[in-house]
Length: 280
Image 1: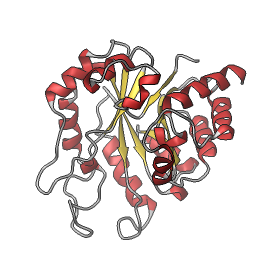
Image 2: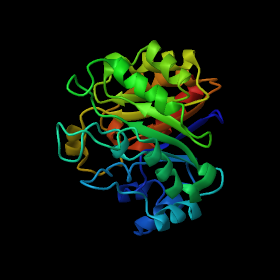
Image 3: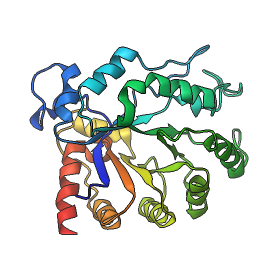
Image 4: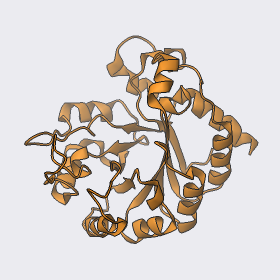
């Protein structure tokens, strides 16, 4: 596969992956074993950070351990704290969240990630579905994002994921590019026209972007698999073939993050994607 394509999973802490590449039962050792097979992984453990009076930030010992367990060329895409993307305060549906798109909080988060150095390749800002109670029109958010993007450091890419499918069109990608931001393109959560969105983003042209193969009905696939993530249960052949065709020969750096909930087993989806890639 192209060197510009970093493909990995949305986490690594799954004992049911022993049949693929894990040895032993120490979950703390899984990342080092994982890194022998893939060049990237998504971290979401610091996403749920919004508290009543404070924001939970990464523990330095944990960050040091992740750095020690991965080689220099390994790359992390890291979900930023939801304190940055939740419009309302903890437990409220009306009180404004004072940390919403706080540039100071983002820099503080980066300070806690400093031991990772260049391994911290991209921060993912995941917004919830924003209804009219929160944002009456898309321009309200895009104006905030433009101001936010102007204050970002050059040391790490910051990518934006929204759950409002009607917003994600070519003008959305052009806005992100002008603001110095990157797109996250999501397959799942009923986001419309996934492959069309990937194609539009590639046409606009970004130095880097993130694609997340997440899946739609989380509860149903957990029921089918019984949370044993070692087999494909909901194959998405047509979408995978289409994605491989779009990404073949790309010049942008793409982080492709695969979730177990996409087909039932992220490692098996990656294996299928690599096989299809060779045939495209």
